[in-house]
Amino acid sequence: MTPRCRGTLTRVPPLNPGNQQPRDLSSADEAWRANAGRAAGTVLFFDFDGTLAPVGDDPTAVQPAPRVLTAIEALAPLVRRIAIVSARPVDFLRDRLGGLAGVDLYGLYGLEHSHSGGDTVTEPAALPWVPTMAELAELARAELPAGTLVEFKRLSVALHWRTAPQLGEAVREWGQAQADRLGLRVQGGRMVLELKPPVDRDKGMVIGEAIQDADAAWYFGDDVSDIKAFAALRARATAEPSFFGMCVAVANPETGQEVADAADLTIDSPAALGDFLTRAAQHLG
Ligand SMILES: O=P(O)(O)OC[C@H]1O[C@H](O[C@H]2O[C@H](CO)[C@@H](O)[C@H](O)[C@H]2O)[C@H](O)[C@@H](O)[C@@H]1O
Image 1 (spheres, rainbow, N blue to C red):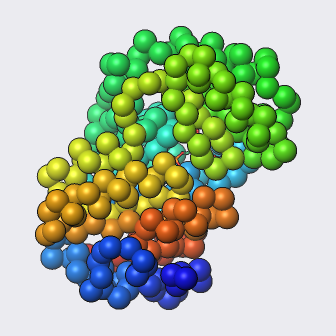
Image 2: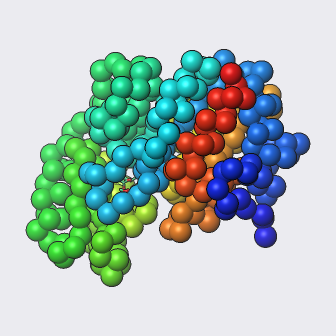
């Protein structure tokens, strides 16, 4: 079994020796120190739910964990770029990140983006799907059993069963049938099934493009959709061994093991991420 860090981050998490890199580094602190020489060429990527913000029953009510935004603000001038890569819409991310300046936002798995506080740009190929998604959300509210939470996000519909776990199987079946009927794609997550337009955009593609001008990148994520982002970092490091990529999982009892197995190291929780990033700023500063 690969040893895992599950304590609070008053101690330094060990790297996951089951993964391919960086084999010659023995701790996260050492990884930050190794990164310090190229901080100006480093991009830091963060997923939102389960990574920056603890998971809760009501998707509209979650907020970033304490200290996380302050730590990101301290890191921003030290690195090339900071980006949030999420299944949430850009407007939601902008609202939750408050006054955080100069951060790039990729929403809806990259179907929307906004750079450094600029306007939100939507992937043109996805726009014709807005009416289909709106109708699908209405149908879901009419047909799915009480207890299912339907989240309409303009270019996708998320079907949640967190507060009614016994509905998971029925919701998944219904969602898959609708995806087949309408030609949509599905993305599983933490007690959620999401239906998306058949447009080639995912977190891996976003990362692959966003690291083109970078010498190093760290990606922090907790969910299965984040594994594609990890893979994009690994692909770049394989193609260009001088590239420094670090994949960091945030522990959770739902997708935790699968994501941790794909990562270089695991952090206990969004709250622990705040402490971890505060220490990173000390290494990079
Ligand atoms: O890419 P992410 O930023 O990680 O977004 C993934 C999904 O996050 C949200 O759902 C999850 O968090 C909710 C609030 O804590 C929780 O209630 C739900 O069970 C989780 O699946 C969001 O509501 C979804 O739209 C995202 O797909």
